Length: 302
Length: 302
Image 1: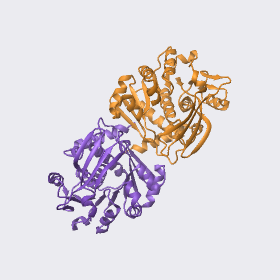
Image 2: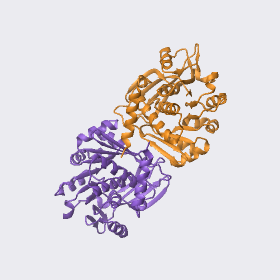
Image 3: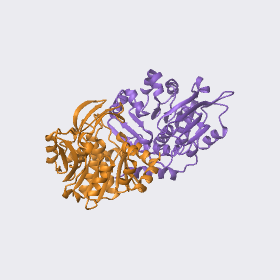
Image 4: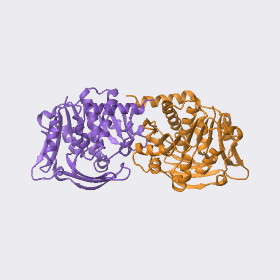
């Protein structure tokens, strides 16, 4: 099975109540592909970086079965850069700086082999780029998931609605679900969003867990209470990578298996937040992942 | 089995994004005793009202097996009154008015028979009143639970710490757990709070569910996604009433049974928020409650 992912590969400056990190590796596609690589190969990346991006990180991803043929490296240019500061509760953050750099002119070009991929995870990016990727596919993937954010709802809602018509799974947070649907009740929001296209809606609530909606069916996955949260950056992308990785590994898109995928996504996200950047996601073992999944089962058993 | 409860019996003016209600029946002890009455009788009330409090509400409680011998009715005085407005997300609220009235001079006096009760739920009140109740007990209940809030942590922390030494279960929300412990991680907060006295800590997170901690063991109960939330007032008290009612009914304080108690408390709270005041909590049937509990089980099953 092959999983195609599209999104940013970038540098981040991060400040959280637990500390700070400067110019560390980040980007939605980085987190998605690394998390997914624990479940399925190849994970195919469509993204862009400047020639400032560390070759050893790219080598590490390649060794994990991530295919970087679709990663454009722009000579003499700089990678996308984001700087943010988290508030004391870790749940909200301020953007301190955004330098688009190579992203300003990014035109996603899918290598021939990518155009027929079994699964597709469209990471958070301008909806126009997400549409451009869908247009290049020669075969419809078995499942298309899309991540987005309030920013695109504010400035590119029409484009976003066009992409939503073509995707199966949407992952957003609770406030975004309310904004997109105009409904406060998440139950009602899910119905409105189903009608926009996505048959499956995943509402990510950070430390409060995640909800999966599918036409009247609901599943809730808690977040694991952790002794230490260092940096929530990338947790949503890591969740998406784990989720789609599990679906691609099992080839099963039943609602029951989607529940398990949500748990695997949550387990991967619980690792992600324990360190800055992608550090905690390196060198995990299947046993470590299974152990976390077991903790989720224990947490809600009564 | 007998359950003793102490707390306010009051009037509320409430404004929520779903509507408003004026001078409706409220108060922690009202919600606690009504919710608990679905599981155990007698539920013994220690509280105070003025002679303005509606006799039909008191009659209704009596018919449900609530013993009001410990409810002081002050002639010519007015009941405690609270007015509040919820923000658009329902999770935070402003107090618009507080009129202590009879509560200003409240001295809780336990009728002789109350002094030997099997279970005790100390509703949110000044810690000094909670201490006064504990002092009058002639037998230590099998389980003592206490609800409190940030207000008492701000102005009466020393008294609060004295009561905490004497209770088994503390119910507070996540921000209060962080304030009381000085720890952001709820896992670490639980350890600090265990050392203050309560062997069990329940962290109520409203629409995000509830966590039960007991010396390294954790259980998580989600909140049920609801089509319509009308008024969150009293949900925490209703939770406490359902929780202690279940414990008192079963007489089982094992961690496994506490988990079930958290689910029953959550189920009762899910009814509470569907109407203003105590309206939705009237006329429930065992089958309606079991059906909700079943929905909780379904929601997290994978």
